[in-house]
Image 1 (spheres, rainbow, N blue to C red):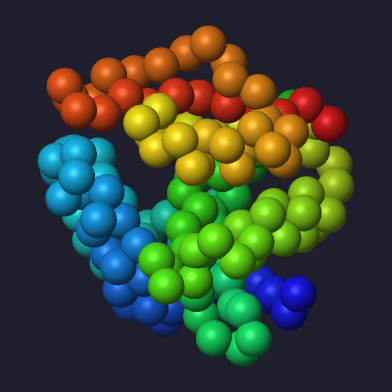
Image 2 (image 1 turned 90 degrees about the horizontal axis):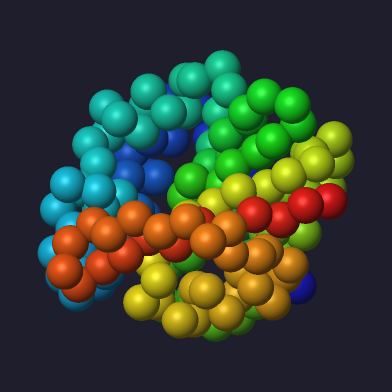
Length: 156
């Protein structure tokens, strides 16, 4: 599968912003999580994230078309966090995210633990993360009466 990652810089923030809105708007409409949804983030917030010394933001390409993004946050002691990963709706279900996780684990080959959070009610997301080796930590956080975040870790 032809998937590639391009490390974003601040000039790519507009592209990342547009893709985030497209990818997360259906979830925002479903769960009404206005305070936490990536669909509500500003371009300025994305620029801040891209410029963080402990963050790498990548644009995901499939067949040379930008189809999503992934932000890798470097924590202490070889712990990394994915926050977020997103694929545009029309490109979901093609195995792109799985491939991206493999690529990111190869890039950050010093990692001993990976962490991420997702929406408990989105069983497809939970299934994907469990399929590629992530385990629920037992931690959850209720965002509102429709949505709960669930947290995962993968130990290498």
